[in-house]
Length: 409
Image (cartoon, rainbow, N blue to C red; front, side, top):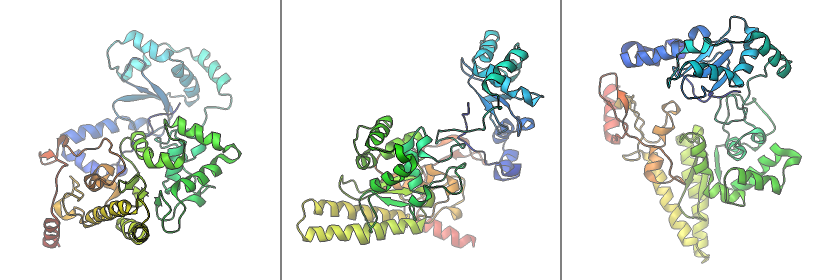
């Protein structure tokens, strides 16, 4: 019933940076007009249609912004919305449109040039929705409407990890019974580090609370199978499959990053990217990894523990790479195409508004993420306001950034 609620528009009351660019650049102005064209319908209710495809996919329209790939039909009489929805959901509406329009794309006007039996569909709506249409709701964690509960999600394990790391969905209540499991600093290590329980135990406790009496070994087995996992335990799933599935589910823009040293029994940590500022990365590097894990491996080497030397080497290599990211010298730097040189980050100092794609580059370059995923820094389509190419694979030295900052002060 509800779909398409996975993107936002940075509109800033139509007077922000996007508006100013739209006014000055013809291409962007066209983009702006695409969003503006539905403005008379914003805040009203109706039916939203895709304008492409053989079946013209439909969804309830709740007054939000929409782009030129779809159109909203809003009746002058709001009481007609349930009847219109029943007509649309049955598929009859789309079939009537397609019977009259064979082109790949239809025009918004084609949507209202079909017969509509008001009395019939009012009757259907009265039977199906005697108390009116249900409130907007979604069990899909990629949608704005999702409320952050693992047990009612299409991807419960992914949601549970997000909750454990302190990620919040827009419609999530201010507080609930799962808040007590949220990690304080947004870092959860897969092995036991710094006195904290290993990640799989923390995750199991959260899931048990979410599912209540329904939680048992069989439930976990089913959740792993439903996630497409071949693993039998949460520990193995977290270590080997979580991050790849996470990237796939959330459009290759992960908000939980799996940092590891490359050793199967080595150091691994899940990190909430939204909280990964310089201080948090330093804590990961020098406290969890350096002070605790590395020192324990050194002690294990002294005790001739099998495998300890390999774990120590892997951990020390990871520590060096994280230090390079903290320093931010090329190629472990962040480059933001739309910012002048004096505003480029110096060292690990990400701006969340710049997006995951740009901020994750140092971690990809350093090879410290558990698995690869579909992200690149090729040039984007179109041109910058000055007509130049939209290049993203650019690196500046720390010296160049610092010199420019001094000059512009």
